[in-house]
Image (tube, rainbow, N blue to C red; front, side):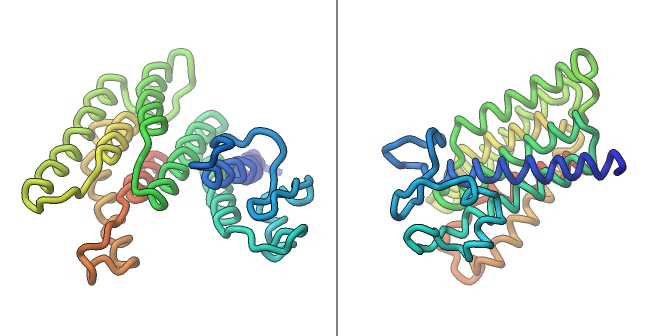
Length: 251
């Protein structure tokens, strides 16, 4: 087996496991027993403990035909969808990059997947995810080439300036939208995610980033029928996240 295929297989398997974890985090948001998956996994409907055979990412859902083996209740499609997306991100990241760069790209993709999923469900991008993503981008840009191998991030100065620019552009657009339309358009989380994108991509890639994010956002709105219903709110986080990951991996 070639090294590229070995990396791809590792990314696929690790991504599936990470996706199972992310799907559980999403399912537990707002629950009294906490967000992070601690202790034995249980069915969301009947509360029965799930065994190892019930927890194999993607495969268990398919074998059980999307139903709990204890109560027969339907399992949310969120689980296989997030697991498949995370596995795909892991496969592509490790296939297109080396071990170190692939791991960084995969970590970025998994974080953006969680952020995008939360934005779709709750119309918000939480600070405990956007701000660490910004900080990690700045830190890695500083450490690559010194303590770490080249990872594809910009130089520290470019990362810092791009982060400030990315935030300013989205924050400025949000301000103008409120003044012109009299209602909220872009949120503060969108501006913070754009700042993180600047840290990960650098100043030279910001124009391409905003162009790609805008095109993806328009496509998302068309698919959801927002152009026919201007009052419908469309989360911009998925477009911002997808544009960031695509440009980082391609770059």
